[in-house]
Length: 197
Image (cartoon, rainbow, N blue to C red; front, side, top):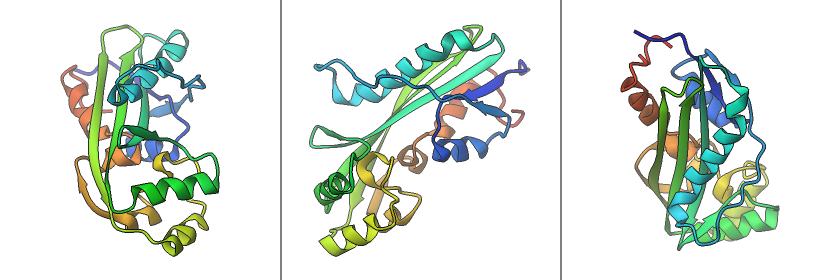
């Protein structure tokens, strides 16, 4: 039996909202505004989960016992370097130029906690993405669409950025920003029936 939980997505991302909407429209949005810094010596693959936990901790005192909060953080990693959200169009060009004709990792950290402390889910998901070779004209044309803004790695897999992709190994939803299928399977272990939420 499901307890009557209310879901809260702690993200302003329209992509994460759209992904969660596949399973339920019964959730609220409560963005977490945090300092996304992390310890200098932290393993690079652990950073997204560390940030997701910080988001959850920031909001934990604001949720009720029957709330379930979901937080996530996604990074693009190439050669042990994080490619986050570009600071400018020139920065976005440099990112895409580096990703050209290479395979990079997309890592998302996810936390899912209930206000009554009965649900505690923490995990990361990794997807490998191989880009085609991008010449300067292709990159400049892409940047003119402004799709790169606010996107890790300066591209959106669900938009024009899909043209850059030769191969994906792993979860597509993870590249978008939330491996929601994996999250829902983990919720099943807590007797949260995804067909009832």
